[in-house]
Image 1 (cartoon, rainbow, N blue to C red):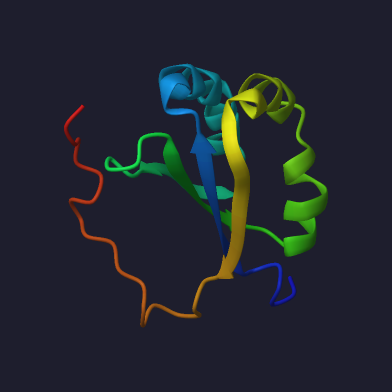
Image 2: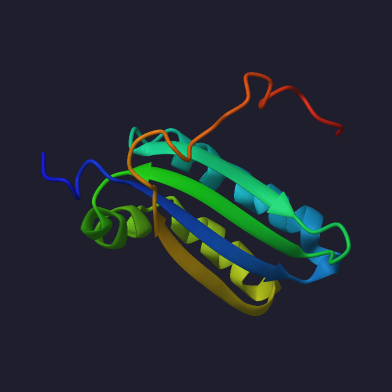
Length: 121
């Protein structure tokens, strides 16, 4: 495998949803989220929100893949179509994308053993 193939990419997507449509958005997201986390290349996917700004979300996804594969294959998976059809009308602003590459080694990587303890619902 080339160095690029072994990189861990971190995709950050910021979304702006009509605050009145948040529950509907999350319901529409669930099937796509479930399909994404079933992909063997997906190593991490969490959804964050800004409580002081209802309707603002950030997706953080970590992928063990090439950038080319992410752009050509992953983003074109068929399970995104129903998600896009349902959610695009809910957007109040264009999505923002950032693609980062993980720093090599473990010098700047840490995960607390209790990281995934259940939080408040």
